Length: 157
Image (cartoon, rainbow, N blue to C red; front, side, top):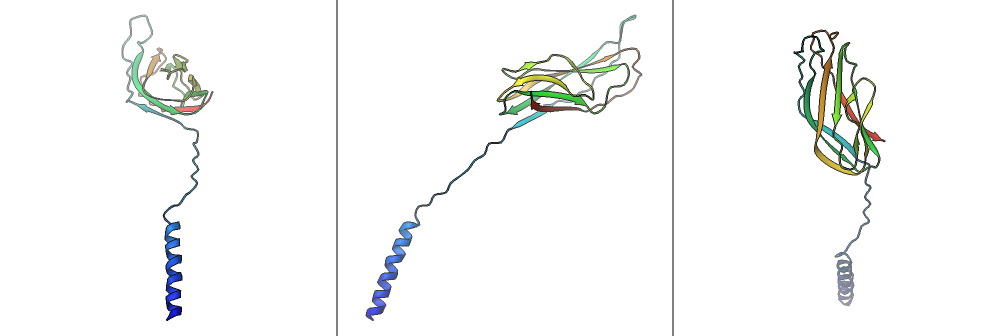
């Protein structure tokens, strides 16, 4: 009986010590912040070139959209390119407003080759920034429906 009582007393002592040790725990947490560079465009773009003044080139067509950008990088730029070049006699231009402390390259002709529209972008998250398009035709542009995809990319400046 004495052994049972001693065993019970030792078991109780160890169990209360174990409970006292388990009411607190710690863990190391590691957080890595990756470089972020995301862009989105909003709006539907449809333009029609349908008029001209006699003796002059056809009137240009314009359309507006907006874009949003988030980047935690420094010295970033936004470039754009078309999925394929425009047909003869038709040119597409884009102008992007620059986020705070960045600079716009103004009206830029778009093609299959990447063209820079905005530069010197650093650590920003902005939305509702202006994105304007202008389609310009010469008399060499054949009547047609032309669709192109514009891809915008953020990279290091």
